[in-house]
Amino acid sequence: MSPDFDALYRRESRRVLATLIRLVGDFDLAEEAMAEAFRAAIEQWPREGVPANPRAWLVSAGRFKAIDAIRRQERFSYVDPEALEARSAEPADAAADGGGRVGSGRWPGAEEGGTRADGPREGGGTWARSWTRARVLG
Image (tube, rainbow, N blue to C red; front, side, top):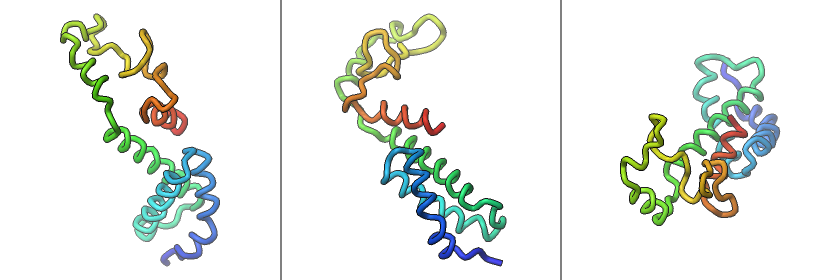
């Protein structure tokens, strides 16, 4: 028997959306994630059956879709050309920190001696917001 997705959407979409908004902190991202979760349910549930708790499944799937969207956005986010020049101007042997890792461990724009968590947060780029959001969701 095929699940009635129209009734499920009418019954659960508001709760799923509210939960996703609380989890991701962004209305648009939560809305897109909910739509993707319902799309995944429409594809999977006829094959594998309706889960015992459809709302929890939808929230979980939406959360993972939001995390994927954040990661995808980070991959294609804006890079400050000045910071990129500063990073590429470092000599290759100066980039090694002696511990076998390459790089200083600092993100462009981070304060001297800081790490990516210490970088600018007030309009300093999306990486800080996305990193923080991913830490909250993950």
